[in-house]
Image (cartoon, rainbow, N blue to C red; front, side, top):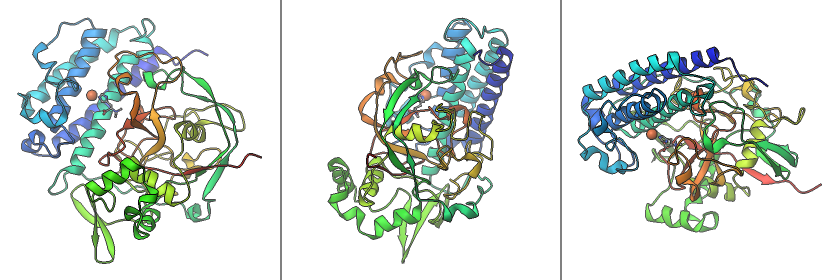
Length: 439
Ligand code: AVJ
Ligand code: FE
């Protein structure tokens, strides 16, 4: 089938770049300059590093690689190379001060919009279907999620506000707690999605035995039952490394939670509030997610199970782009794009349900899977090894589905995220699964 029209893709690339820049502007414009240069957590870069890194990646790929331009400021490349300096070391670098970082990214962007006008959208792999523009829009949006994480870690009064997400649908309490996904093959990954990144490719067949998966993400109320049942004090539920980590760091609850009398409070973007029982649990590590699942007599879904639940349509046998079908996400389908600064309660977004009725697979919270981050059969690093390939192996676990903080351009049924199993600052929760007996 022919792909989208080049002019449509050119328009889409422009929109995606502009939308990312508007978001970057909010995230770097809502605090004083000293909050841009400070390091709010050793896990994160100063916000001003993310800002200039966004511009530097854009310069390298869209001005130099696609546009054939000379480097504007070659001395900046090593400063903003994520592999040269660990995050904790970045505040000590001679970074561009905020005003200079802003003018650098604006200068790059102005020239990029000229390149975009005339770049071929139908030639070499880097520009086919506008791939490089889509890749760079996704890169900026990924850093916008990273910067929102920095805002969440930052102490002090709230700098960002957003309207509340929609409530759970009245039918949510009546939904079956889990659905059966029948065993059989399905198509995992994609070769057709024009802006899919290298690790999502190519499309390939996978056989997935029958399994049950939760209809909804695990809620704070459910997770609290694990806490109150002594889950953090019982080695039985924990991966040995997770148990060691929980003991060493004296963990007793998700990140940002604290006990208050008989209840729990959490800090969220500068405000302290009671933990909302109906919201998907957030800020848990892979170890915590896996321990909860073991306590519940269940397990995390594998990455293939997650994707089959999200994309496979039992009616047609096809894998679709999203749980609801092939249409791009709208605000009715999913909580994406930092429109809200929290997940919606479990049972929201009925229009985003899968054919089997699984909800909130896309948006709200990234979902930990049991799987290591590994290449698909036939993987080819593109356009650079440092995006995915250097992270393959058993150190990183795969997350799927996207959070409220990620833009639709960087979120789809095939999109793969990954992180270390101890990480909790990311907007991650989970749902659980179990094997179905063979019939
Ligand atoms: C895919 C979210 C793990 O933030 O480390 C940004 C995305 N890669 N710049 C990350 C990324 C290069 C990446 N994750
Ligand atoms: Fe980056």
